[in-house]
Amino acid sequence: MTRTDDWTDTGADARADVDAARHAVAEHARRLVADHLVAGTAGNLSVRVGDLVAVTPSGVAYDSMTGADVCVVDLDGTLVDGALKPTSELPLHLLCYRRHDAGAVVHTHSAAAVALSLLRDDVPLVHYQTAIFGGGVAVAEYAPFGTDELAQNVSTALAGRTAAVMRQHGTVVLAGSLRSAYDGAAHLEWLCDVWLRAAAVGTPRLLSPEQVDDVAERLRGYGQGASGP
Image 1 (cartoon, rainbow, N blue to C red):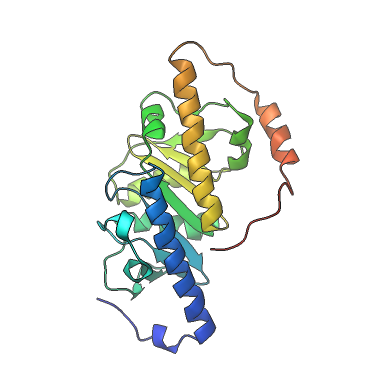
Image 2: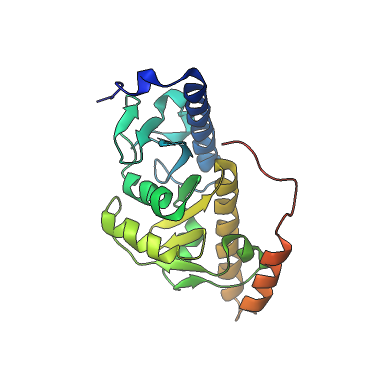
């Protein structure tokens, strides 16, 4: 059921910001399918706007999703606007906002990351791009989807990092904007794929944590900056 008692009193500018976030969520949801980061209706994403979160609905085809399909919830998970039920992974998203100060969350079911999670407890330092996540990315222990246990396991794996792989499940990437979180998810899948390809034919040579830390320092202020939800 849609709760609108507080939402209708929200200012026009705030409503416009949330509407923009809903359209951005739908746009990136469609990209999840096109970029092969999910299969079917698996995976989900969200972006925070003040004390509200625009998040993908549960069990809705991403390739045809529109902004009107996207749910809006508060930080307690109460539905504020939208006709559909939010993703079953809502507890995970909300914990990322409350505990890890995320601006956006992207959760994929990408194949290389899932394959790596069956073999390792972390993503090896195969490339300097691991620096964008704060260093080596941990693999969170398995728990059933949509549970508080899974959210807690992922939160533990996120300590000091902005990404985690979920064992036998997928990935979670946090960032200040939805665009950055999405790009991070694509980079993480690429890193997992690189390791799988190298490990299939030999023992990969890895960077040291110190080398990755050096790159993290070099990346400060790199590029033109990011904007948008």
